[in-house]
Structure formats: structure tokens, C-alpha cells
Image (cartoon, rainbow, N blue to C red; front, side, top):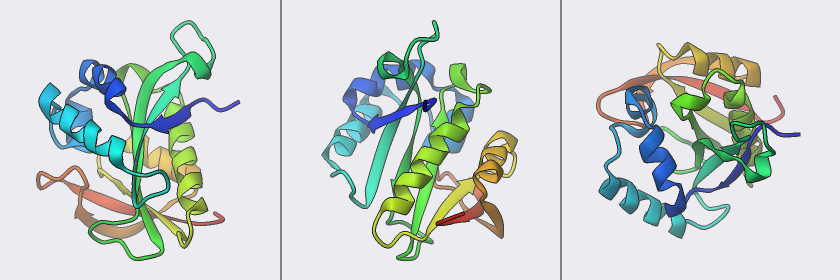
Length: 175
């Protein structure tokens, strides 16, 4: 059984994100702490993106605190698959994944990232998953290694922006 279930990110996830965000998540995934207004605008835009389109954002639903089934679980994090963006070639998809603080350290990051990579590689023409990871984020690097991704030896702007830098990791389809 999967440790997480992905569903399209939408406005009904706002409370969990706002209540659960912390400085680490803001720096490494969002670029800043979300305000309710800015998050509402982003989530409304995400709801208009089409399934299988060039930009997809997901909420990760995991087991509730009582060990209940994932199908009726709680939001534990999220992630995205972006086929358009700086530094991407036609055969690449940028994969991002993040966990809310209360759900870190439970092995959910690997399940979340693995599902995103599998979905990306199933898209027509995608042969490489690109992961951009903060050099200090050892947990995310461990997830990437467990997936089979390898560091590309490049440091580039982080997708969170703000002058933040990230190491590029690459995972080819079939790895």
C-alpha cells in the first residue's frame, strides 16, 4: 500500500498549508511564507491547470495521526511536475516535493517523490526528472539518492527564487 496519495492541489488545501508552513518550507519550497491572499491566488491558478499539462501541482495525502487509511488521511505535503521552466530541455521535467513539518522524518518524502517521478516519466517525451535541491538539505538529498538520482555537478537558481541556489540532480527514466 502507498504511504501517500496524490490529488490535484486546490483551494481546499489552503488551511493545511497556512497552518503547517514553517521557515524551512518557505525557504526551500515556497520562497517565502504564504499569506492567505497570495496562497488563494496561487491555488486558484493551480485549479485551472489541466491534468497532464505542462505544470501540475499536487497535494500529498497521508495517513491520519491515528494510523488511519491514506484514503481518508490528512495533507502531509505536496509537490509538482513542471515541463516548462528555466534550464529545462524538451525531454526533462522538474520535480519538486515538500513535507509539512509535522510529517517529516516518517519516510513519506520518498513515497511522495517516487510517485511524482513515476508520473513525470509516464508523460509523453519525458526521459529525465530534474530535482533541484538545497545543498544543505540532507534529507532531500537522501530521498534523491534512494530514487536513484545522481548529482549533475551544477549549481543553479532554486525554483523557490530569492537568490537561493540549488544543486541539480538527474534521474533518467528506467532508473
